[in-house]
Length: 75
Image (cartoon, rainbow, N blue to C red; front, top):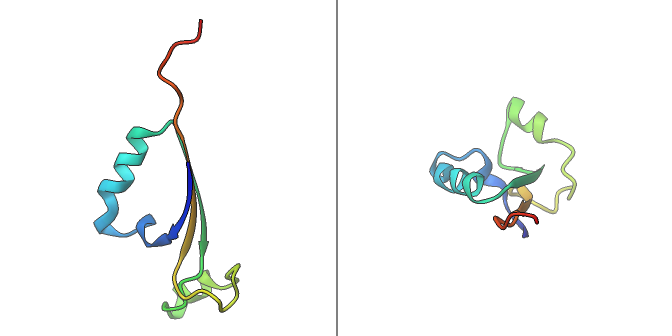
């Protein structure tokens, strides 16, 4: 399964349950943090520079790919 979402769940305290759940439920978790949070300033803003969307995005964006392997044993 793959989805594009607001990337604030990657480091927000309120979403630690979600992060634990996907870690437990899926075999592989790939997250592409495209960053882009234009609401930051100072040193953090320098890290956010080079947004893949230019100035077209004001919120951080993440592309997440979740892989769940079958629990059925191979014969």
